[in-house]
Amino acid sequence: MAAAGSKTAWVQVFLATLAQAICAGTVFTAYGVIAAPLKAEFNPSNMVLMLGMTVISLCSGVLSPMLGAAVDRYPIRKLMVTGLGLLSAGLLLLSVVQNMVQAILVYGTCMAVASVLLGPIATSALLARWFTARRALAMGIASAGAALGGFVFPPLLQYLLSDMGWRTGLQAYAIVLPLLTAPLFLLLLRDRPTAESSPQATAAAQPQVKTLTTKEVLADANFWLLAFVVGCLFAGPLAIVSNLMQLAAEKQIAAAQAAFLLSLFSVAGFIGKPLIGAIADRITARVALMLVILGVGTGVITLLSAHTYGVMMIASVLIGFFAGPASLLWSVILAHTYGPQNIGRIMGLMNLTFLPLTLSSPPLFGYLFDTFGTYQIALAGYAVLLLVILGATMLLKVKAAQVSALPAGAASS
Image 1 (spheres, rainbow, N blue to C red):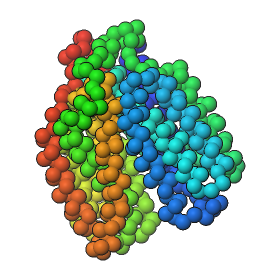
Image 2: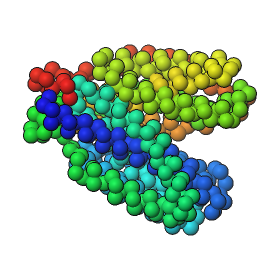
Image 3: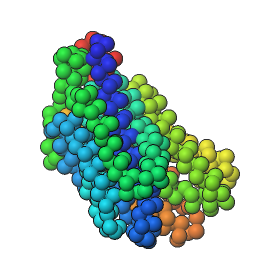
């Protein structure tokens, strides 16, 4: 690839990373920062206070098929800028809410749509068009942006809320964030390679398979098999990290030490995404997915047998390191198998199909603890489930990246 083309491609990686950082850091990780003044102002129950996260997860999941199809059809640059606008509008609306119902509605509308337009569906579609041979590495770097955003944006927002008051602080954040970032997307983001920017990458962006209809996707057994595998792989670590404080308490570990386990989980995931992405570019995506499942399973078994804090630290690192890259491998497999031109629609549909798994897994772990008085049953059950999805992964039909269709030298993109 020509130097200019390579530079343009990696600029898209930077923008995808920034989008995921803004999305995860502001919409999800910073929810606790915003929830604190809402609690003080309106005094809702903790259950009602946490409904915002449930509602945004549910609404974004339901909207994913429609918005994913839009990502395939319309310019991603315009959609991402629209997402920034909706995020800003949501923050401004939050700054004037008069009760918790209004706050929850904001999260179910503006924030839900913004989370899809700035999240993995849009960024994966963008990078799938720009990369072939290094597709997994590019997506791994971008997905690491979610962890980076969780590190940067919540403290920044907390500073503004503490210094200016929560309503004024939200308004300042809502105005400054798009002013600083929207110009980058408008000026630098390119929906797909062009002959002028990168002749080689243009070949990578050409459709290798036809554009699929929703009916054709839902009739594909491979779609449902992958949805089962990925849904289970997402649901377990989510349940574990959601219950990790209580799980640590069961093993007589202090709350401060347990909180550090959450940090280890996040840092390991941040490191694992680009590393596993780089490995996945050198082996088949299916083998990389099997490696991730085995890694998560090793972490779960370690956690199951842990009796000391040190062993729990090892378990947290293992689960975080291997669970983090699951989302990028999902994107890579879809791009390889169905083509970049279908990735938005299929990710959206698949996200909706395994939404019940991801929503129900944290409370299911809690229910099993309430019933049996221990998390060991839940962990053992998930370890067995991982063996099942490992076998299911062997049945997946996953195409390799079609590097051979590119002109000489294009593999560098």
